[in-house]
Image 1: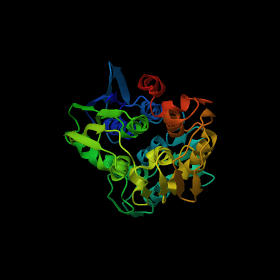
Image 2 (image 1 turned 30 degrees about the vertical axis):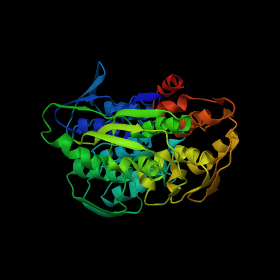
Image 3 (image 1 turned 90 degrees about the horizontal axis):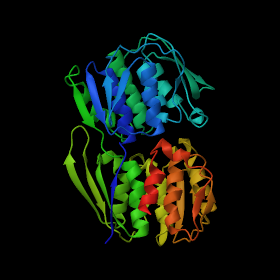
Length: 400
């Protein structure tokens, strides 16, 4: 049986946090396999604008930490590009600083909701001005923060992380309750980066499991065995894997280490899938992989149902509406609901020229869909994939 070995770019969520936490240490941090996607570049550039020295050395980044109070007032607004993670985490980082900052983003990011982060920070005493009450540009004024007890109304690792960063910057107690079942990267990484904060620290970022999901889906559609090497195995990121397993896919995980994040290999055998039903409690652990699951559902017999995914409406595009539109362009049909999808399989897809609305997840998903289309899939643009993986389409040609 044909075997495809895939080495992945560094995990995007971990790369954002590793750079930020390295900047907040007082020692030097050596980071290997940091994501080179555009989103992480936004975090990198924002930190440099705040006075953090970050050097390129071969395949590594050397970050000279400035400590909790070492940021300098930037000379211009901090451009977060297309990265919601950058903007939301920096709201927490900057809420307790003694200088004014403005956060800006591209057209897509400027339409994404930011009140969900601003509101609990305001309860700590932050002075944050949002455009039209909910959006960027965001003006953050100097403020003294106090303690906070807050129940999260939605599962969001970005909100949770922003509040934790505000807590450590301001040295205030923050107690969080409510919807806590989201990615736990910041909780895991904080003690690892801050134990012996003044010492030299080296860490290699594991491969991006969300990017890896595209290769897994491709292997299943093409009938090829796929092995992802040295990839993130954090349980809060394995929702896609768990759905596939529950649907009959043969998947083996080989754990290598757990500090500060579980990592290892994933091997996926070509397998027949059964239809699936996803609900609200599963969504936070696979939110980025839902378009791929919709694709897989169109290629298995029976009806699959996804509910509780209204957060998709606030991504780089309204991914409920736009995912259905991509399938319409491909010649298929996906029924949308207010919070998800009803998908009937098995469908024939035609292919053709596809508009993926400059949404990186939809662009990469449509490329995978091309494996089962009668005609070739071509794109109005492919640069959006660089948000996740600048080399995706080069690697895709090799996979084919």
